Length: 214
Image (cartoon, rainbow, N blue to C red; front, side, top):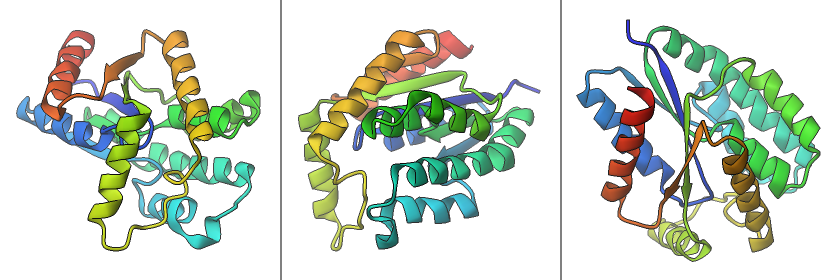
């Protein structure tokens, strides 16, 4: 049985992660691999309910930062134990749109929470499960804003998303957190320029996957 791989995708809002997850999943399936496409928060029935509460439910507006941290990682703990670990044990390729690096960037740096506390909560949620490879897709603030505006304009009634309406200062801190990640984990995290065409970005990801995971 081929070895299972966990590949995660990170970046700010509207960086193109979901598109690249889909394209890379198609590529892996073309190679004969069984692929699991996941997202965070979410990925399980309970996780999807927590996702809605954290991101969209009006009851979640103004929640304490600690509440947000714990809910995110409750969803993550369920996903790791119910889906990710069994899939990896079965030799599947798991592609996850966000994983614990998002918590370090968004709740740690963005919300300016205590780093040791954030790490302790994440460690409980994931245990020994760590990505084999992480793509950090970077886009300029201008591109991110344009894509968000386009996405919202395409929806007749845009759903509330607590993260998409954060102030620019929050996202500057998130970007700083991601820059710290690249500097401190270069063996795992590969920075990708996401400002170009999706097909060109996909080709770059395939080259990295072939080199790193073959």
